[in-house]
Amino acid sequence: MSKLHEMTPLQKQFAEEHQNVVFRFLNQKGLPADDYYDIVIFGYLQAVQEYDENPALSHFRFSTIARTKMSDSLNKHYSYENKPKRKAPMVSIHTHTSDGLALNEILPDRQKDLQAQAADRLFAMEVLSCLTETEQQMVYLKADGLTCREIADIFSTTVHGINGRFRRMRMRLTERDF
Image 1 (tube, one colour):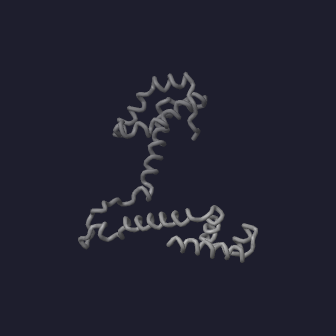
Image 2: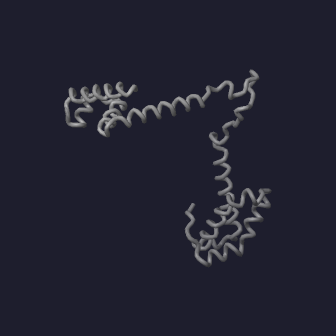
Image 3: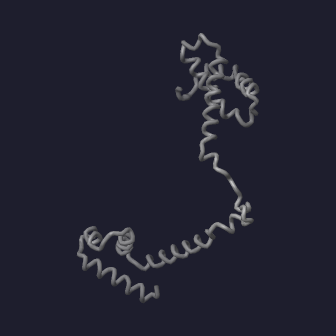
């Protein structure tokens, strides 16, 4: 299947003149134009381009080529819509289970978790604001699981120097009641 590209003026004119093929196709399939026009039109436009650019297709009626391409587009749409992940059951959080409980009563309270995360994040930002940029980088590296030796190598210093920095940071934060 070739990709669509910009249509020539002749192709545009041909597409406009034969647009009734699209509506006949939708009507014969019993598909509402409001819902399916946008799905099949790309197959139709592809048929216009191929019919114009491939002389071997001139042995066939244009409507045959167009119907084939529009059917392909429709089949791709159905295939896409019927993928298992698109068929997942949808339920409201207020739907009651067989036990008579609503889902929002069974599921953990995510709002409290979000509030706790937000509070922790604000606290961490406040703590980090008391540190220099270099100290902040050291804290991030330590939080990422690096050892003091690895941090010392990154900052071209000794392990003793890194441990001293962390000790001074803790003392400074303790003084500020963190």
